[in-house]
Image 1: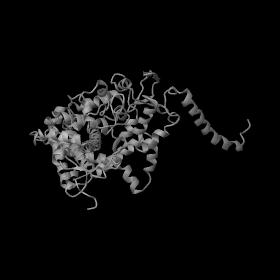
Image 2: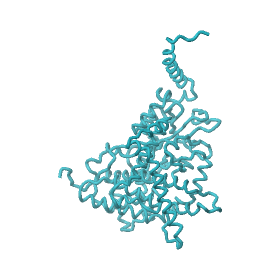
Image 3: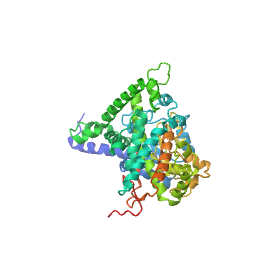
Image 4: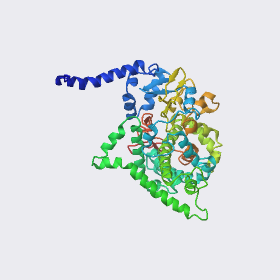
Length: 500
């Protein structure tokens, strides 16, 4: 058999990969099961576009623009479709239809093996059952004193600093939210409001979430991460060591909290989120119980979710109120009926505050991105398209909340739209996710948002937006969660001039 001449090897080395890409692209464009789903050609042949807009923090906007151009079904990657048709979205997120979670969730979680990252439906159900009534409204009302304490301290410091010049409330809300969720999880806050400085663990959490959000969009990035971690540079070691530091922190504070519970013979210890879970660790009669390692993962996930999200949405609810003078006036008049009694039970009875909070979640909920699912075995028909098993399908709250056929003037902040909402409006409101996978901490978040808005307006009645706090600076960037692109939200007293 004649050996292939060496002069042909360069042609093979270069030509084979090119042929693979060409024929692969032709297949994706014309013969793939998703070939009939509309979308730009470049999303059909490669995930490069999706990875690029994700790295730029523009994924929600880019996918939304595709929906505006192509309709309710749009192909955003070779094996992934974004869906905005509400009936299809309901099917995808129904607990009865077995659209499972992909490994995307584990990639985002970045080693935190909480309920959020669990893919298997039965394992997820067991984990949620272990929580029991931890996040019920009844239990949240018992935790309100802790929440109100930190919000009161936070707003008092903002009020103090307003006498000195512009104040970045996003910074203060980050301190506040982290202190709240840490104390609720571990019985001990992070001392950020007291020290008026960021706890290093919060910086680690930010790194962890950012890396996870990027890894989820770029297949194989974990291999590159492993190689990068070998580089003996202090910055590289600091970034790659964030998970280890976070778990060491959780181990320490959870162990300390466990000892407090063990020695609380007279039940004098205030109620906290994980008291019940810790008490049930060694209870043989408790069917759904977690071990120490599982509680550590859950508490870490709560710390991530409860600090980054509420600081962002809390910032946006104040921004929206102060930006719209009519909204502010109505809220201030409503709050005057309460006097100094700002308990959440009374705040829940304020109808206009309820409208403002709901509209804030529509436009500024912290997690409006797409939550992918996998089409179950046997395939599934959604709308006019049949999707084979294993196809990725997702829907993003950002698009659901801005459906022009459902929400009049969808980009405008109009709390009054919720006075008489249609069934379609309610169906499109998904700030907490969908069906059985809704955010368990939503009752806690609602208490925080109501108390933040009411306490700020009561204690800082003369606060106004600073000149630096503009529509442009408050535009989102989107790395899993959203945050203002300016990374700050400055407020001041009327008449302050930066040149003074």
